[in-house]
Image (cartoon, rainbow over all chains, first blue to last red; front, side):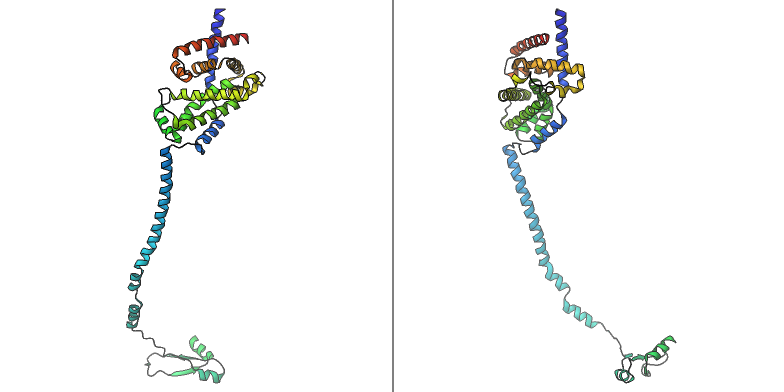
Length: 154
Length: 179
């Protein structure tokens, strides 16, 4: 009888030890942990509250600083804008442009309105500047379009 | 005891969620088993385990190291939760009327038919013990806690715990032989 009780006791201990292998359901654990630590139930201590307030304050301050930097940057550009305009002064550009000797001769192109009107068709006055002939010797001929085209094709 | 537990507790008191998370990860399975063996139903054990850690989290600010292990504080909360649970739900009267599947079975399904039956038998026998016998049996023989830690958790002397465990095992064997 005693040995039977002893065996039962050993079996009992063995069975009790097996309970240690019981693990909570993983979904339950995940959900419970998230609710406890991820939710709003975390009772922050006084230091944590101060830290949190400081974090918010720091964020606002940084955002303000960023805005100031952006606006300050814009003012900075405006401050230097007159200098940049001076550098590209229109008066000096005009003087420079006038200093350039531009000689464009349009003497070789004429439009004889009166002939065109009398012929009833548009005429183009073409200046033919033949080789070996100086500009003083150049002659002006009034040609019709067909003649001008013939000359060009030759 | 968890490595660096004192540091984690100090951080958790200051509100560091990750520190409390580490304590939760280590102690949650122990508390769950403690509650499950006492109440039997997995769903109830899950609810109560969550409540234990919620209460612990809410009381963390006022936690003071009195020289007792952190686990003893958690077990004390768990014991109170189970007492409140039985007080409000009057589960004691309905234990034997409840379907076996509602008991610990889902949590031990992977132990095989024979092992599962044996565990259910022992678990039902534990539930018939006085609450303090249950506490001693679970803490000493399931969780292998040292006598001092059990004594701290139960607020008793080590000598009293030794006596309690002796009586608890004798009572448990008696229930099992009668079953």
